[in-house]
Length: 119
Image (cartoon, rainbow, N blue to C red; front, side, top):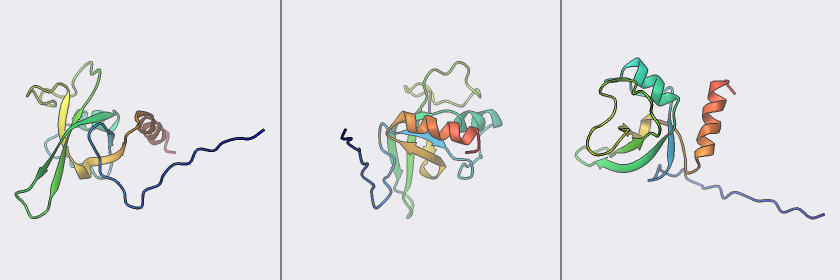
């Protein structure tokens, strides 16, 4: 019996997060200013989706920002946690605050499970 193996294309350079990618916040790269403990815990343990991108061109260093949207939130972790500008359940973050991202949501779920059990 013959079997076909699927191979994944590995990129030489890491790609940038793009619209539609799923993201999980990192532990060590997270800037904790202006966030409550409940907000930080929520963002580190839930998967969000990039719905908009922006770049700060005023500074010499280009800083990328991503608007992250969350699904099915029963209770917001803090009163002022989400933006109320037409987008629902969203939060702007910097690129360096992203711990893991993928175009596949299951990859992010696997990442969270591994992190939960220290694998």
